[in-house]
Image (cartoon, rainbow, N blue to C red; front, top):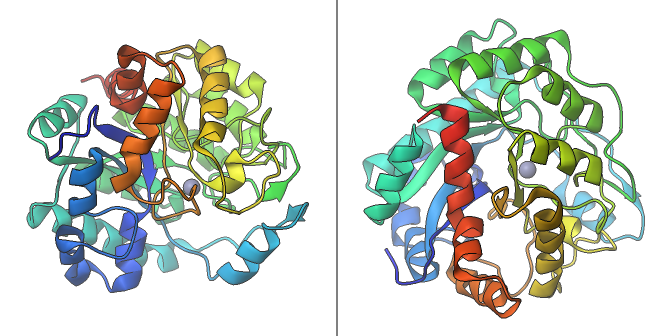
Length: 352
Ligand SMILES: [Zn+2]
């Protein structure tokens, strides 16, 4: 792969959604040769991107232009999209999982099922991919599909995106506002968490509302993890975590991946990309203060969000590493932030 080190292994990307929209598994080859997006193999090699959580996500028929326009205002409150039925979600899930395995077949990445798989891939300079589901619309109430997808390699799931499911309720995109926006997990949601614990599938807290967060904290026996969320005390957005939530994550020995999405970084919550890297360091400092050096990582949201203009693709990750070093983070801490902490928490959660 690359001389840019330490390799970044991060908590969230949406490249599978982008390839799905581009036409499905037959378009996976663009990942090898270069594509118009934030992640592909040539850019990963240049920037030292070692992999991360590859999300399978069923998009709502949302008007993105309206959403982007609203999120440039001083105050906004986007309505939650409607629930998506399992029957409608399943073909989209199947297609994105097929893209993930097509990427593996053509040699673009390795689908990792254990922490040692990830270590091996990073050593061999292969992109290490975790099969992750963002929003459990593809899982049925009986959880049969959870078992099937686990057998296929699923190792991480968020019960909700910012949308209701049969399992719980996501936070709407609202600023300024607390994440306390409604009811928590349903009975199905509690059963999902317990089944994930039994199978050693990681449960992702990002996009859950606050009541849902505390329900997972109550019912899960695994470390609490938010793959791509930021600090509410700095940017009071519904998608960010309050200090109380961060303290609960610390107590569980879990972790948080820093989201690069500008609307969750900027103090004004606006979806505008003129964000200095220093603003990301402010969030990292706060996360480190509450969570400690072993419980903070990255969760870029590449190919799924508007990100800072100096960090638009994985090829630009050296800029972030350099900013961390100039900010006074030592080599050990930078390595932890780049990938070691993710390996630590996955080892604990998965048991290998
Ligand atoms: Zn997300």
